Length: 390
Image (cartoon, rainbow, N blue to C red; front, side):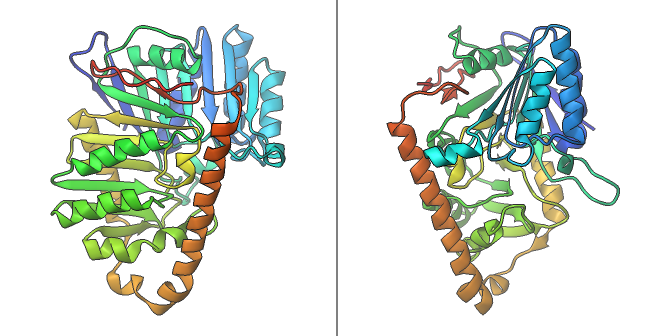
């Protein structure tokens, strides 16, 4: 069941739905595309040409055929296996399709990725979260879909999001949530949202991150919360689609466990979510991972403060937490873990951070390029957030 809320005390009606995986998100995304009247903006990291990807290509083509302006940006690294086929198929049916930093860009020293997952239709409905377009996000018989979340947002902030994506100016918009976009090298602004939420925690923190490799500052914020009596529950991946990602995460276990953090690994499917709740008052969800690469990539993060929706996000984490394997201090201290797996994980972490530094350094020295806007923070809750899109 899809849960929706209506935000109160805003200048126009607004609703937000929390969507559990592709099984809930895809039908609603396709319905929005089918109902599009003017324009569709889609940015996605991984877009496969077959299966559910073919369904999206067909729907976008039908929209273009009836006169809707369709703009699609897919990432060259995330869609390396089928991105060119997807782009060609979209162009053949009348869509504008761009591959952000194709693999050949590596030879030119451009390593940045567009890791966003945004579908915006008619500036009236937006889908943001961690879900790419691929069959892994839909259950097939006994095989579970990847564990992931997205938000469906309707209301005036969608028009604001559209203007910012297109680099247009416009009046401020009051909203019950915050939408943050960051560009190459701008992820520290999104990291700051996590740090502020963690620092303000008094009762409980629930985190579910498929690629959990935070920097020392975020680790300190998590352990400090646990030591001051906050119950911290961390759900991480027991299996991963990224080599060495799990080893890198496990190298942090002993420090977190010593501080009192409860850790469990989800192994029923790939954990791909990037979500956190704090004290039942704040929900953070988006494409932004707590890892070095998300500090350098184009990313999204949404903050929601409605207690009903926050509670539903917390329930999603708790449901998966209860069905996951608990990690103990004894297990994290085994010799094979300490002397073999931890060094491998630490090496993977250093490599990832080195790549992040290279990407960010090249971003600072490179001339402006066309493509998705670099950094945007939207005005929300009656406060004007800094616009760093330059």
